[in-house]
Every structure is written in C-alpha cells, then in structure tokens.
Amino acid sequence: YMGFIQRPIVFEEDLISFEKELSWFIDQHIEISCQKYFGNLIAFVRNFASEESEKELRRLSQDGNMEMKDSSKNTKQSKKKETGQATTKEVENVNNEFNEGWLKKIEMFKNQNEKEFGGSKSFKQIVKKFLTNIMAYYNTFYKYVKDTHPQLQGQMIPLHQVMNQIKSLSLIHI
Image 1 (cartoon, rainbow, N blue to C red):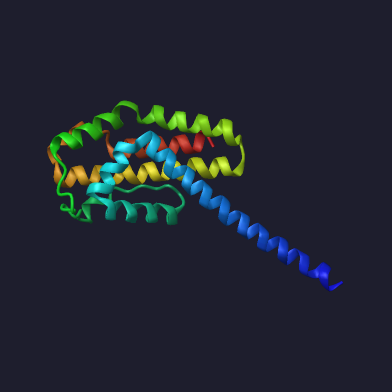
Image 2: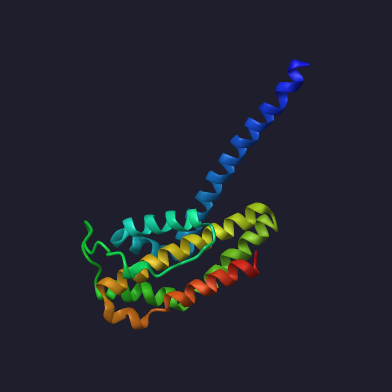
C-alpha cells in the first residue's frame, strides 16, 4: 500500500523534470530561431544596448500579455558600451533589413514551427516566446535609435505599428 501512495509523487517529480527540460529546449530553439531570422538586429542590440534588452525581455516575460509600451520617454539608454556608439550606417543597415522583411520572417518562423509542432501547447508557447523576444529586441533598437540617432527615427517602422502587428499575429495564428 505504501509503494502505491508514493508512486504519484515520483511521476509528479518526473513531470516537473520533463517540463523543465522542455522549457530549456524551447528557450534554445527560440534563441537559435531569433538568430536565424533576426540575427543582425539581435547582434546590434547585444553590442550597443544589451542591458536595456535584458530588462525589456524580463518585463515582457513577467507581463505575459505581450503589452509593449514606448518607455523611452522615462528611461535613458546608456549611450556608451565597450564597443562605443553605433555608426549611422550600422543603424541604417539593421533598420533597412528589418523593414524589408520582418513580417515575412515571422510568418516563415510560424509556418516552420507549425509543421514541426502542430497545434500543440508547445507550438503556442514557442510562437509566443519568439514574438515576445522580437518585440523586446525591436523596442530596444527603436529606443536606442531614438536616443542616439534621432535623425533616423523617421526611417523606422513606428513602434506601435510593429507591436500591434505582432500582437495581432499572436492572437490570430495561435
């Protein structure tokens, strides 16, 4: 009788362990996918605004509702990193690449993962995390440009437009 009572605890521990591993694999998959589809944006943000990016990712992960606010009005970017401030050309290159294909890249990611994971709970979790990461990176990039290269802000897709589009994609396709 005692062995029977203790079995659910073992299964529960196994399930918790499995869920932790699955979460780790999902995080790795998201990291690889973000690099694949938005590598230049991510590299730029990590080189010139990594602290802000980490804060934004934490905030979005905690919120869970994918709400994005333009918080650049009340936070100051650290304008200098070890690598210095980005050149105008570097900003323009990242911005042009993002503008040219960001929606298509998100669709490609979603379609590929839909094939691999179907309509599973993991698929929904993967797409949501991917979109949350892209939102955080773009928001950080946008704020960086606004603070350090304001003359280029007019060439960028407005932050609210990107955020609304991503929110609608996450609601429609998941």
